[in-house]
Image (cartoon, rainbow, N blue to C red; front, side, top):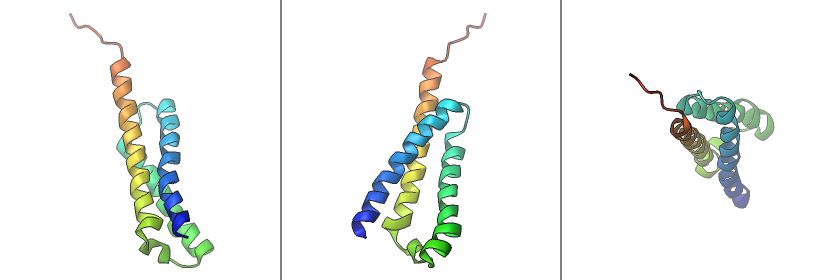
Length: 100
């Protein structure tokens, strides 16, 4: 189980980084903070209302930092950083308008 939790903690942010890149390409005006909070909110909600009660039949998963809290934070952070990087890239490539 510890190896599974470690893989989960590593793979989850990578998957959400890829999802975020796709999302911000499609919706470039989206807020990195709001989007990252939305992504992690969906994950927390699924864990709290589906995985814990229906699959695990216990909420003890929320006592494990490696099982829940580290992946939650890393999902939020990877989504936010990708969104922020996409915003900066978009700003650099935006044509400058000249004012007379």
